[in-house]
Length: 219
Figure 1 (tube, helix red, strand yellow):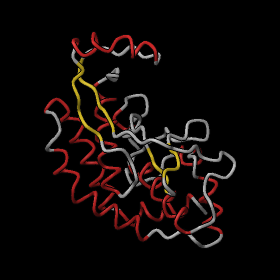
Figure 2 (tube, one colour; figure 1 turned 180 degrees about the horizontal axis):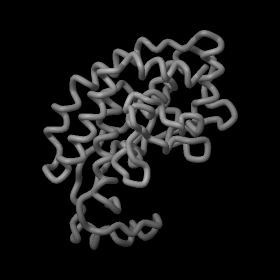
Figure 3 (tube, rainbow, N blue to C red; figure 1 turned 90 degrees about the horizontal axis):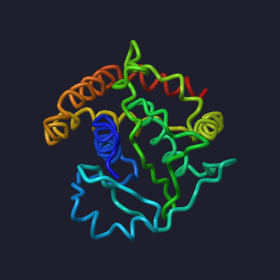
Figure 4 (cartoon, rainbow, N blue to C red; figure 1 turned 90 degrees about the vertical axis):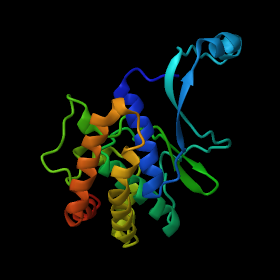
């Protein structure tokens, strides 16, 4: 279904794209155009699913069958692999300032032994006037404590099984690619993309501050 705003479309598409680049298991996004003819031909089926989309441009994502919900009380197991997956998602959400992965709305599921993150519409919250950018893009947002993996990662950190080295590597990888990826976006998203590129590059330039902030947030 087409998103309500251009900002939402951009965030869903570019957020998903950067998540994959960061190393998350996440749906691959595509830009699609829903024609009026297609809606007319499938209206009955859509109605049976409780859907009433409008024609226009939208963002579609890869479909995964067989997703399993997280255990709300213990979303992350004790194994290093699960901790590493959870940390990668947490770090990415802090990087792109995404507040929309919480206990009551995890936007994450288990899939074939891994965590699959989805729904990036609220990523890049610094684009929204009511939220605004942090004074220092490398700061860890205050909503970190509301993240679905926060408590599990704090416990893992106290056990000494949190390794931030892969996060630093992923940040460098995204920092090197973000401008190139932004060049392939629709022209009408250019101003959004420029702000995201600036933000990612600013964090990359202060990677030590960002990583230290992650470490302290989980202490």
